[in-house]
Image (cartoon, rainbow over all chains, first blue to last red; front, side, top):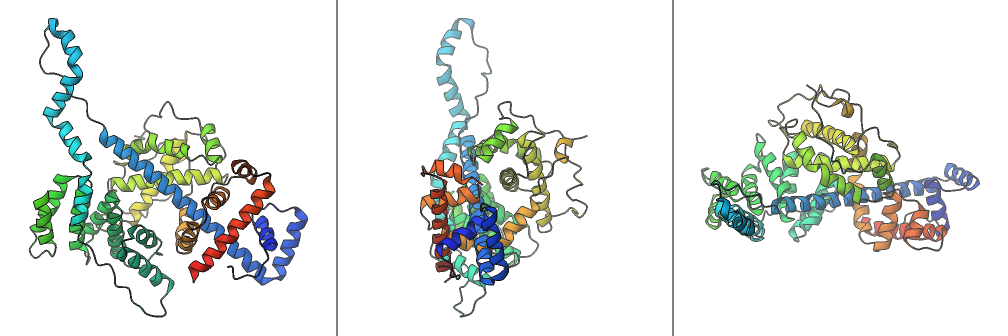
Length: 268
Length: 211
């Protein structure tokens, strides 16, 4: 319920005023009341904030829609099999009709031999995501303190971490993305965004976040970023790159994720 | 040498058709623009923004499509003097420049202080002449994110009809007359009352979220 004791009719008038759809005489009456009544002014401000929130929601929904289109496009591009190379030897004239008849089969066979189809099938296997999920060693998240008077920003951080710990990474990501600038350090922001993206299978974005962390000159998240970067590659089916990333990590003396990386390598 | 834009898709709808579809709140035109030109933009932008990951380029292109949509919806863009993609490429290019400014060092090896919206040396003339102001829109959006997260949670608890009615009116900019038709309401006054009821429900849900 709103903090303002307006009747439904008063709200409807205020909304119509804000929508610029009131007749001139009614508009004048509203303006007169706004000038004289601070609570009416505050109600208008509340309505405007609500409208801003609806627009923001619409913007986010449109963004989600474009992300889905992008994912569909990537999938359809990945599913396109490259055309086979032309046969290296000339075909005797008398056998041309036979070749035409069997050309589709011959092309497919050539493709299999070339390994193209094999690679394609491999990349299409849904198992990578599931396997990578198993190896995405759960990050414990930030501690949530039970202090009585927490600021709005800290509440958001807590909300994101609580959602994450309840396996609701989508809510965690959305809440995390709503943090105001400077709420946490840039590396913390990037790291947990990447973790939540990984959990929601936004693997390319998670990879980008971890890659950026790795590029930072100094961050406490560096070693963890190394590991999750490799996991993000794995989840995308980019096996060779994932293997290289895990191997690089195991070569670092005392890397806390070396044992996890070795176990992952056994599965690759 | 002035870099040229990739060739337009011959099947690209005209600017007028695109504007009409956007004004009607038909998101399919945005899907179509993305499908047609996302790859072309990535190819065009990659050598111009080598510091950015392909995901950043894609992110910029998606954001630019939304900026284009919002400019048309708000009647800041009423006629097009170039193909829609030119506007979107221009906005996406600027978003890429801004993204680079925010990159942490050592990735950010360039000095961006010299770059502003009027100094864009790497643009073909038809794009340089266009300036979709995305900074204001996005800055406002960022400032409001905290507050809007609460409203978004409340909106998700509304009925599907209420969600559609409120977003179509307040985000897509659809008229009550058009929405009365969509919802098969007897007349516009029914739609206005229904909108008011949905707002009332949303206020209640927001109040509950705050607590």
